[in-house]
Length: 359
Image (cartoon, rainbow, N blue to C red; front, side, top):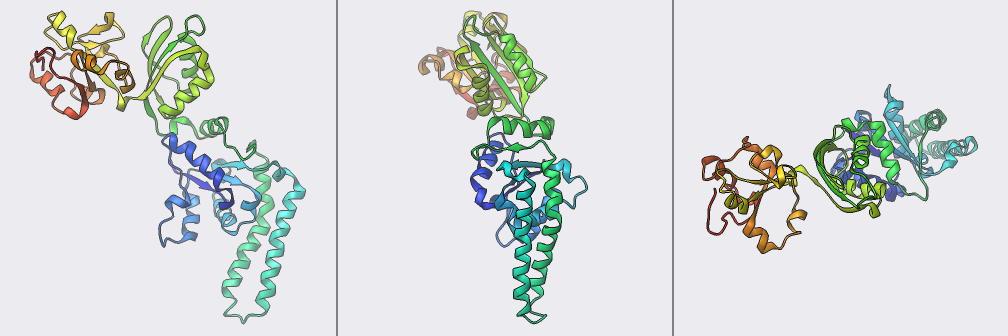
């Protein structure tokens, strides 16, 4: 997905806000400060706006009076489907006033007159660059009102106090289509305050945002689910507290699958005299031999335990690594169980339990 951010440098603070919102959710916008390389043609970079899938355009007075910004506009409107691609972010509602629009057009008329006066003092050869500039300004003057007519006919994002907020981001994501964005594989584990909020309502909330929620565990006041999200885990956690309310949530752990762990219950292998590796599970009475029923946990979960106790009794192994082994049952002291601990970088804890080795 190629999303171009078009703005005037006087509005850099707003551009930074938008860029940060998208960056925190693993969406990289195409932007001059990052993507315009040393000695690269500025004009060619501006022309690349036509190749974008969408263009977020911060429209302000500074933008409408900038030669470079309006050059980007002129390039962009050449696209047949530019109306579908443009995502205007309006700095001030005065842009909707036709009198205001005419004053912007007059600004360009005056600029053209100034250049023509200078041109009179130059011979024909020396005035060629000036003529090119005049031609660009003429195009801006001629096309400005038509461009603004298109923009003003849209239901736009109009900023308040130059602040880009949650709902603005949600509006853009809804328009772009969440399925077109990078999707994060999220594990969402929540414990609610008793009798204040129901797990079913949390699932409904997540389903409305993302759809296709896979339930790992569902209790009276707790739930653990997995789904694809265009939001990062940090942004989703923040959004959940805002939407459901901190007073309704006892604990919340939102993390990416790539950061998830399975927990080996070493003590239970010993207690059950099990011939197989035993995993922590939100089902099956808390423990299971089958990886399909095992729970997914974060490092935050590990830190809730006393380190010495955890290292002695449990073993955390990165879920992505375990799943790559393509086994669901691991016999103790076998080739399969030995593979679990081959890469020490993906484990937290002591491999042995009271000098007993199950791997």
